[in-house]
Length: 252
Image (cartoon, rainbow, N blue to C red):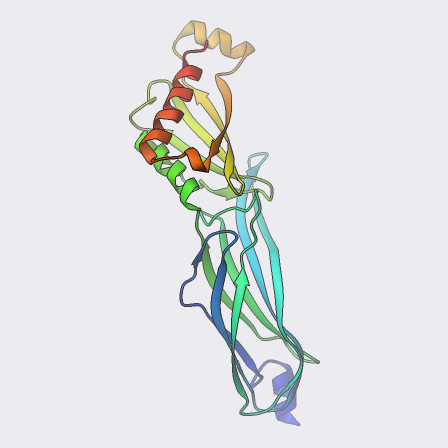
């Protein structure tokens, strides 16, 4: 009886663990691993064993830092089973990372983990957490590399996700260091292209600009689409972005 009471509190209960050899994955791809189930000191009835993809991030709204913690997707790998003392089973699993235009990547304060949980009747549910890294696809990475080629340095808290858009923040260090204070970048990745929005804050240059700023602040928005099949290399993408920024900086 004591063992049953302790097991219901999670002491000596069944356990679950997930092992993932390679925790890095692109959106739309799958992670492969193994779930290990071990029995505790007493027999326990399990309703289900479920793996959930969890997303955590932080973002600023009205100058306040807000937290985001949500379940992205889940999959049930077993249902209605009895786990006896000494029981052990290893279940191979494949978990697909959803593809969506607003699916953020792991960056800064935006992070992912897989939560594996045993739903045990009349007991505390054992839970296992495993961090994973959602990486950009080759074309989004090429875009980031192009910004680095132009001397843009990623700022602290770049990658914050507000539940709709992920914001990447950069400061110029070489090109545009005299014209631009900073830029904020947003990317909506599709199957064969991605929509890019760049918000830039221009530096003021004296009294005339200050007077103009009272009417129209030195902020501008550039929107364009990068087609994957036309993205030949980092330098060509960098040249294209450089032309767009130069054109915008020439405007009064």
